[in-house]
Length: 406
Image (tube, rainbow, N blue to C red; front, side, top):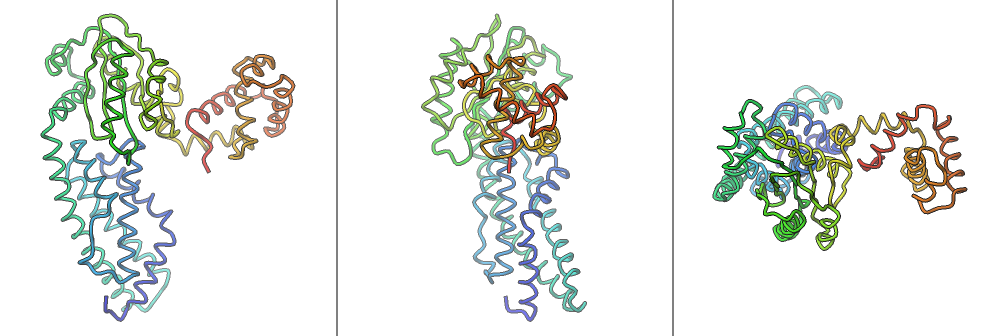
């Protein structure tokens, strides 16, 4: 990059880089606000954030380290996100639009930085133009690679019969105006009995996720006593639909025991329900259970029945944490003492104020519960009886959503 404004280009890039922890989330939120296809669940959103961060880091490296455009390749996180975009049958146009919107936002950051640095107007204009040209060249080069990655993955994925099956199931789940007869015809299955959905997934980066998903499907067959319908959504995700004439009785304790050898596999279990409405409700229950598990970074078997309340909050973690902080005050500390006090208060309230029952649940002496409850009330600044409902809800939300977070 032979240019008289090299030093100022680097200075602008360094200033943006210093604020990148705050700026990158702004960009990802903009994507979700402007492009419906970018409104993902937590796990895919993390991949989107990693893709955004890796592209921004690459652009800043070009501006500060004199990296040639011929050396540009698609960052691994961006390539994986493009593959996942194709697997979920989302449009290439939406993906490319995000890159152009991101480019525009980056140029706006450049202009803001130059305004703050206040070089002579001609120098500022030349520097902004140089940064815009380099950023545009990077985006063009990456987009070329992304189109190839997306098209190859779409062709590979479309060859799978699961893609058509998943599309049909999504149509039945999402089309509220679809009647029972049409839904049954679309799925080639009766929807008049009972239904229960289980969502299986492994985290990104899992080695050989197919083995874990197959093990989970086999365990579900054994635990339910019937052969379920399986739909592979992507390499890390499988939907399982259990249908029966009577109310299903899934042995989740056996399921958890059978899957101890698969630590990377998680299962979100919806409540059983009947009819077309029940088919949809059980699926959405399982989705909410999965959202809680991903938000709390939990693994294993997660039943909607156990986390239903937290499911209402799973997509509002920052707001929930701020509200819980107001309710719990010092009990929201991230140290071991605060965590122990939260656990004790929750057990005490669950035991309806019985020190003896709470001690049995916690496997400690009754006097220990007395002492910790007094400590918690001192931290709160008032007895537990005051605002008891708020305290209980806040504690349960913290426990199920993995809060507080530093």
